[in-house]
Amino acid sequence: MSKLILIIQVLCCSLLLLACTPKHQEERKIEPFTFTNQEGQAFGTNELSNTVWVANFIFTNCTTICQPMTAEMASLQHILKEKDFNVEFVSFTVDPAIDTPEKLKSFITDFSADLSNWNLLTGYTQSEIEVFARDQFQTIVQKPVSSTQVIHSSNFYLIGKDGHFVKEYNFVDATYVDEMITDIQELMK
Image (cartoon, rainbow, N blue to C red; front, top):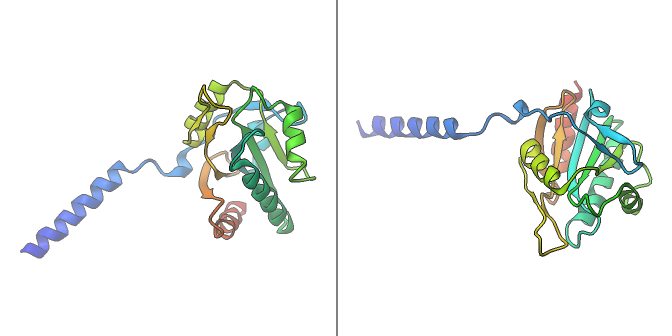
């Protein structure tokens, strides 16, 4: 009898956990947006339509993770081009008052000479990027009043051709590239 009670308790706990789990990530669709890229041109979901894309959050005055993250994104761009994957890259600045299109263009040229499929975006307010990151990517962006640094995610985000959020990856974990390649191959079918 005690074995049956244990099984029932485990099943009840499992059902409770499932009920508390957020919706499946693929149900999250990125809402339409248009911002300004490093060339000073409008860029957004219209240009990303029917394309797999990888996004991240950075800023040019970052003294910690942004440079290694941007270097890793450049490496990922190279790897995916070698595999002939048609993937776009989008970096949202989390410090739009400082990061003009010109500043973003200067910043990115230290990491990649190929901007044909990589857009660094600005053209919104600090409050708009904080809400956008929270609502669309379920991540935090926050610029403390007393600091020049911005708190933000260091993950890469994969978005499918239909604009649905697929998965996020910790770029510090070396296995993320193989996992992302597998996921992109699945999305390209």
